[in-house]
Image 1: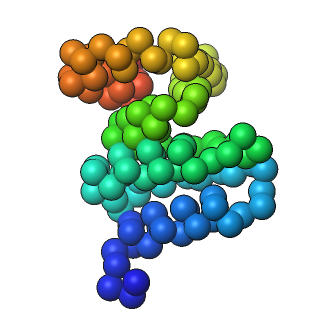
Image 2: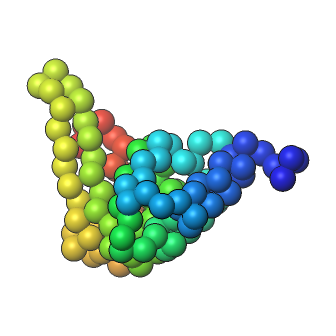
Length: 122
């Protein structure tokens, strides 16, 4: 473990905390930091698949790879996109019902439609 990168250490720490932790609400800020995109995807998939119905996870991310892992775990998730501007803060919710058709379309999935969540003008 001492030779592992900071990203891998964080990956393992997050997974252990989710499995062994007793909190009902878990906040994670940019879990994909220092991870290769492939590991970021895997972390998203692992995080969402190990959560049980008693826990709520809130994640702040800038990674479409992490988000794709969460979506493809087949666990119901909601995505909240927060934006800040002159008019103030806004929150837009993309529910599982709206997200599922996007991910079932192979063309949209292959062009990286989830990257659109991180574009400011949307």
